[in-house]
Structure formats: structure tokens, C-alpha cells
Image (cartoon, rainbow, N blue to C red; front, top):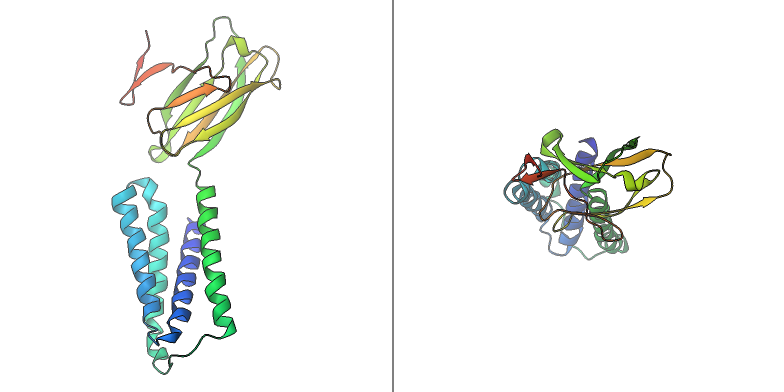
Length: 225
């Protein structure tokens, strides 16, 4: 929460400063809080009506903090009445170049950090004859999902390595078994996901599909025959 608020205020300040400097040529300094306010409103509405639910909360916090910057910026407007339009200085030109770069860097960092998944646990269990390879789905906090992938007896003494997790489009998870496990133990891993988008695909690197332990029809578990 604190990181999101800090990022929201910082983004708001960058947008405000960029618009303020860009408005020097026209003298319309009121555009700085106005543009910041409009972008903040767009983000808030996007979080409410496009994303929705808990997943949209992060964008909503960003937009609300940027909105706060816009309101503070309005309070400074009376002090700008004496400012006249002018040409850009070298500092102004530097600001107009650096701020977009910072904005793109922050957006890229945010997209990288919001991968939509995390490893919530991993380990092994005692090997038993007839233990199958399967996965199960459970719901954890705020409606997020958790996948438990259990490898069967043919993978005794192995460990699980995540090869790829795709969350854009449908959800796809690719794993492999490596020789780093415990003797007479079977590996498992728990993966947390913001959401699961069908069709869900879970398979080994060699192409072998990992079946569900249950038939997840409309997220209601019924045992497979």
C-alpha cells in the first residue's frame, strides 16, 4: 500500500511538472493541475469499470494519489498569476526530455513487478507406490488462486523447476524435473496467481500434460472418475 501511494504521488508530481514546464510557451499554467486531474480520473475509472474488484484496487490507489497532487496543484494557482509566458530554458528542455523517460521507466518497472504470480511454497513428500502427478486449485486471500503441483512416483528424487509462467491471455505453466531432490521423496510446488484465465495449461517441459486431481467445472471441485 505504501509503495503504491508513493508511486502515485511521484507519478502525479512528474505529470504536473512536465505540463507546467510545457505550458510556459502559452502561459496557461492552469493546465498543469487540469491535465494531472484528468489523467488521475481516467486511471480511477479504468480501475473501477475496466478491471474492477480487488485487482483494480492498485490502479485506484495510484489514481487517487495523483488526484491529490492535482488538488494541491490547484492551491498554487493564485501564486502563478504573475507568471508570464516565456521561451524554454536549457533546464526546461532537460525536464521535458527526462520526465517522459522517468515515466516510461516507472511504468516498465510496475509492469515487471506486477507479474501476476508468486511462489508461495515448495517442498517434498514421502514417496509412495501409486502416487500420481496432478495439480489442484484453491482460493486464497482476496479471491486469488493457488495451484499445487504434485509430481508422482516416476519423479522420485527430483525437484521442480519453473520454466515459464504465462499470465497474459490464458494461464500457462511449464515446469521441469531436475536432479536436486531428496532420495525417496516426491516434489511439489505451490504457485499463487492473481487470477486464472481459461484454458489453463500445466505441462512438463517435454510436453507431458499435468492433469487436475479434480474436475474444476465453474470452479466447483468434483472428483475425476
